[in-house]
Image (tube, rainbow, N blue to C red; front, side, top):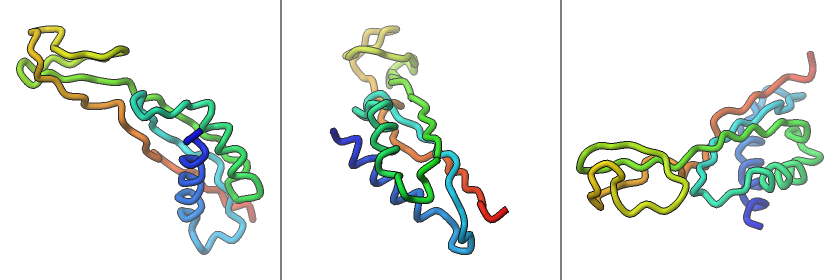
Amino acid sequence: MHEMGIALEILKIVTASIPQDMNNATVSTVKLKVGKLSAVVPESLRFCFEIAAQDTPVAKARLEIEEIPVMIKCKTCNALWEINEPAFGCKACGRGSIEVISGRELDIESIEVEDSAG
């Protein structure tokens, strides 16, 4: 399950993003963009993140995952479409000159930090 390794890296990045001058800071939300070609199972990543974040300032953070569809663009006619299965040619002109323009993402979109000192 490579989701645990990903969860640990996200946790490392999120923890490093907490401002040093916020002594009682906690992370409330971590927003991710995960492409369908990234081979990440969102529910597995949530589970692993929850386990990895225990006893850290990120322990109560909500992990929000936006799944990014696989989008293909034809280099010949500029047609753009979403796919759910392999594509080897343009659905508009039939040419084989296509490229994946989204669906490989694995990005931290935002981190919401709160000062618990109130």
